Every structure is written in structure tokens, then in C-alpha cells.
Amino acid sequence: QVQLVQSGAEVKKPGASVKVSCKASGYSFTNFGISWVRQAPGQGLEWMGWLSAYNGHTNYAQKLQGRVIVTTDTSTSTAYMELRSLRSDDTAVYYCARKGGKYGSQTFDIWGQGTMVTVSS
Amino acid sequence: QSVLTQPPSASGTPGQRVTISCSGSSSNIGSNTVNWYQQLPGAAPKLLIYNTNQRPSGVPDRFSGSKSGTSASLAISGLQSEDEADYYCAAWDDSLIGVVFGGGTKLTVL
Image (cartoon, rainbow over all chains, first blue to last red; front, side, top):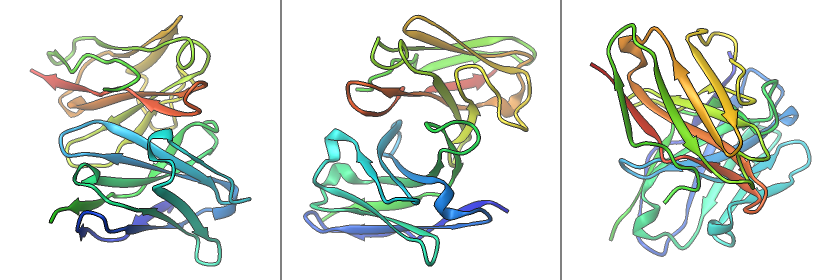
């Protein structure tokens, strides 16, 4: 079945970087984009950015420009999100989601299970 | 503070009809379609409504969406206990050049 499986929880110190993976299966990886959305504890959803698995084009939220990088490895159908210069307010569950399916280019129709990233000294 | 504004909570009794509002501006809801996501406790979000008023396959027709000007609404009729969840609206924002979400509405079935 179509699914996205993310890497496990991470604990990082302030100032460090984290890289979360998202492995796709059950569909043609390069026909869709991958978006990243995060959710701080008890808070709402925040869009971080996305990447076209077809041509590598990226678009990032202005708030995170310069700190976030989204990449893919098409040989393994895996997307990656790297967040640098971590701060305590980056503590959140990070989700990957498939973008641009049959429901429209701005919709996220398949979601990963989420990866908890904790930033603490 | 979220770009799209939703009430933090809503409630209803089984069988009732409830609506959740989502207020935006001309750069997002006013000029683009709206999507709604349902997030059950402890789970990842799920696409509930796309293109303002369309349901993905498998979503019951008890859920419906609409839009007027710079505001959108999600309506749930025949409320059921399993509808207890957080609901988020989302839209593309032409000024921010990105997707914006509402702050979420926690729906309680009494």
C-alpha cells in the first residue's frame, strides 16, 4: 500500500543539526512532491517546505529559510529534511507528506507517522 | 499566531450538526482553494476536504466544506463519537508563497 515511513525519534542539543528521513513505497516516487510539516507539543500544524521529487525544485517557509534543507534520493525513494542551528522551540513532531496527488497540487494526501525531535541541553 | 484563524474549540452531541470556521485574507482563502485535515488523538493528520468542498474517497458525506470571500467552513452532520479530533484548515498564501494552516479546532462530542 501507499505509505511514508519516517526515521525514529531524535534528541539534539541547541545549535546542532538534525536530519529526518521519509521512505516512500507503493507509488512512483518521482511523480509527486514531498512536503514537511511540524507540530510543536500541544500546538498546531506548521508548513516547513516542500520538494519536487521529479526535478528537485524546492520551496521553503520564509520563517525557516536558511535553516532547513529538503533533499531526496530517488534511488531509494527517500526524502530527507535537515534542520540546522536547532533551538528549543524547534522541539516538535516532524511529518512528511505526499504532495500533489490526484486531489490537487496543494494537498497532502499521504502522511508519515511523524518523528519526534527534542532539542534540549 | 496562525495566518488562518479558527476557533480553538467546538462541541456537539451525537447526531447534531456542527460547523467550524476558518478566517483568512485575500492572499490566501480569498484567492485559493481550501483544504481541511482531521487529526485524531495521537495520529498523523488526514486529508478530509480538498479543493474547498471535495471529499477524498473514503471520507463520509457527513463532512462538507464551503467558502465565501475570505472565510471557509467545515460542516459535520450526524455527529459521531469518532469525529472527536482536531481539525485544521489550510490554503496557499500568495504573499507568503507557501502553505498556511489555521491554529486548529478541537472538536468534542459530548
